[in-house]
Length: 232
Image (cartoon, rainbow, N blue to C red):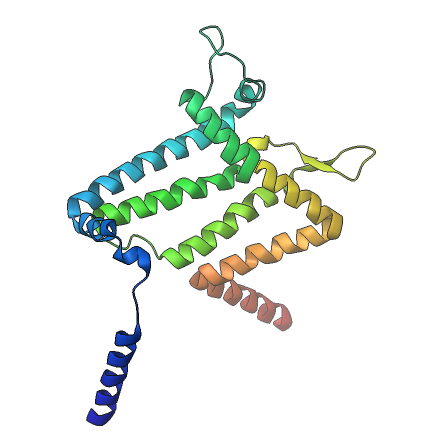
C-alpha cells in the first residue's frame, strides 16, 4: 500500500509540474479578487445586496401578475407617464418593466425562479452555509419554470376560431410567452389527449421522485384497495 501511495504521490507531482495555470489566474487583479472574496465582510455585503435584488425582482413579478395588464399599454407605447397616469406595479416603472420582460415576455409565473436562485446564492454568501443543494434545486427549478406555465396554459386553453392557434384565458403575465409557445407546439404535435397524458405522467413522476414517502403511502393504499376488491 505504501508503494502504491508513493506512486500516486509521484504521479500527482508529475501532473502538477506539467500543469500550467490559466492566464486569467495570473492576472494581477485575480489575486486581489480572491483575497477580497475571502474576507467575510465582502461575502456578507454581497449576500445582502443579492438578497435585496432578489426581493425587488420577486415583488416586481408578483405585482405584475395583478397589475401587468394595466401597465402593458404604458410599456408598449412608451407613453410619458405623469401624475395623471402612473404605473400600477408596486415598484413603479422598474417593477413594471421587470414583470413585463421576465413574466409577460418570458416564463410567466416561472420567472420567480430568477429571484429564488438569487436568494439562495445571497443566503449562502451571507451565512457561509449550504442553504439548498444547488444541483437538484437548479434542475428542478428550471424544469418547473417551464412546466408550470405550460400546464396553466393547457388547462385554460381556447382555440382561435378559423386557425390552428391557441391562447389562454389567463393573464399573459401568468403563463408568459414560453407557456403560450409550448401550448401551441404541444397541441400541434400531441393534441389535447397527448398533452393531458404528458401533464398527468409528469405530475405523477415528480411526486414519485421528490416525495418517496408519500408515494409509498399512496401505492400502499392502492394495493390494499385492490386486495379488498379481490376479496369481495
